[in-house]
Length: 592
Image (tube, rainbow, N blue to C red; front, top):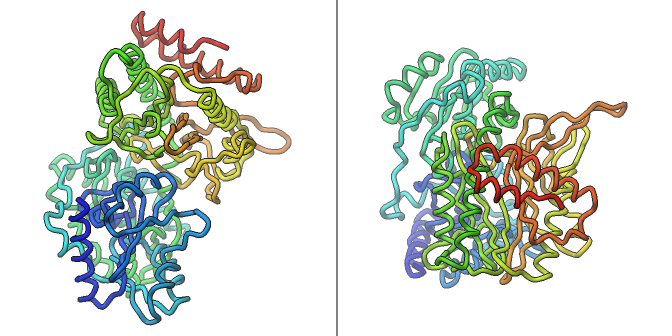
């Protein structure tokens, strides 16, 4: 594989010389700025061999590197070894940005290439600004992988389907009306929507074009009196075509979008900063393009009553699957040959037996002992560890159901563990509970709450490199914005109806990893003389292992919350379980 990577890089460098560019940057995204992309656009993975979901490659005529964040440091070091590409650790002091690195090795007047379709406008603007300080030009060039990637996967041709209103809660006509109100308020003629989860939400449709994400490749242009969906029309069944017509949605071919944007004249078109640079370039030739956050992002993030009810129902089924999996694991550990892969398969089996199951929401992370320290670890036949009746197993997993999306992490002691592991486990639990019990005023953003999950660790000189929480889509992407809970500033405020995860962790390289995660719903709390306050409601229903807890480290408030949470888990799940399963759950949720 390493030899193949070096051959691919050689082919890329040949393209660079032919196009008079001194460096080429390959981002991880597709034309829709997606986090998870169809295999057709997995160019960064193909050129580097690094399989993590986040990372950017910059390759010059004689050097190259990959930039990624702390979730992937260990994985990237292993996968880049022998490729000639070096690892640049993002957000670590001393690590140069891509532009700074290129500026230090390229000469003034040289060009850096990028693909305008797989690079967002925001990214291009930032790149141009940084490179200009060194007298270097950022230049849009044809996609090099169109000619260098032999056997490149075709664009997906799966057929999208309709999500019934009994799951979505609002019709696509109602959603289009809300968007047209936005156009009116912003004096815009049209809005181009390129984010696939936004298109799926507006149209109440879902697809299977992207693994784990129920999306379909398309663009959507909404004007004051017309909506056009740009999609491979061969993907549309007669039923879907008639459904779209009934909601006044026209269909054109996916590739027509750029020519249509060029043909417009003197229009004010609204676009998100995440729009790809090529389409922005086309639209801005003869029109005024207004760059501002998509209103759909916020509409989608605030769940309606039907969606919230769906989440509750999905969490019940997911909780039952998790309990049955945990019982199976307890019965078999130390008695059967279990690996990280076999437990992944068993968890899938339990979930797939649930009503409305439509697949997993992301690739399951099952990391035993030292593998748990790799934040986004994914086992394969070569790397999968055998499980022993000792140490810690971290399982981060989730499912897609017609009525909701789940995301849960539990760290499970498989037998005896050390006092150090117990102490770290309890520190994580303290942070998890402190965020779970938060009550906060209207207007608060996730960044203001992030410290609650970290404070107990900080007092011990411990931290983690990833965010504490992200939104979760309703039978959509497991990672959803615009809100987040993280250290770096994300100004989007937390509103009732939003879902958000709570997932602090501690990772000791080469030893073990610990993370506990629930999905939560933001709900009104109370009104006081000082304003309106919100709080979190726990959506996830699954016991948190207490064998690893040092209870003398928990405050009485934290212990009380844990006991109440466990009583709620038992009361909600026990009616859905067999007598044996119910007894196991009773033991797992005993008060302390």
